Length: 199
Image 1: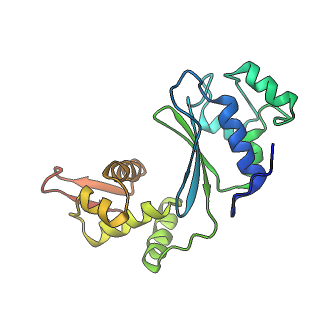
Image 2: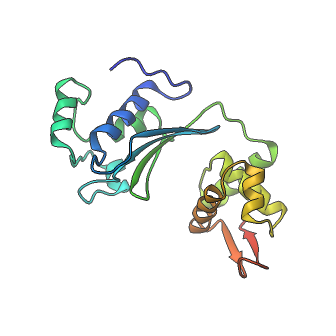
């Protein structure tokens, strides 16, 4: 495989994420392997999710692999793109300890933090509070949403989308993640209610 040069992200880790995406994707899905680049992170998206009942916890902590595509996996091994089964995730984490993995709507997503990102003073304050209280780190857009909710607890999804610069669907996904992590709570109905930010 030719050299992959993505500034701020370790070449070997990114290369492994791409190999994993093509090796383990579900080729019955009418989709493709995609890369999404944001201001403070980069995602490699592979259709099909995890295979064989594996969980995120298992792939992060155990050198285990279930091969969805036997022939493709063997081909990758023959040309030495894959050296040892089950080592891909640990290699990524060795090179990029802040890398994260999740399955969203049947798509396996590997996320790399971009090291050049410098949050605004308000975002730094919110990030410090959130990390101290919840032990979590968030992307730029998530921090923007938290800041905006702190500034205006009655702000609408449409207003958030306009201020953050993403779609309303993107805002809804962020709000759902923040709710699941217990960082925000919706008080009252969609109309007439308000947001409460913990901490």
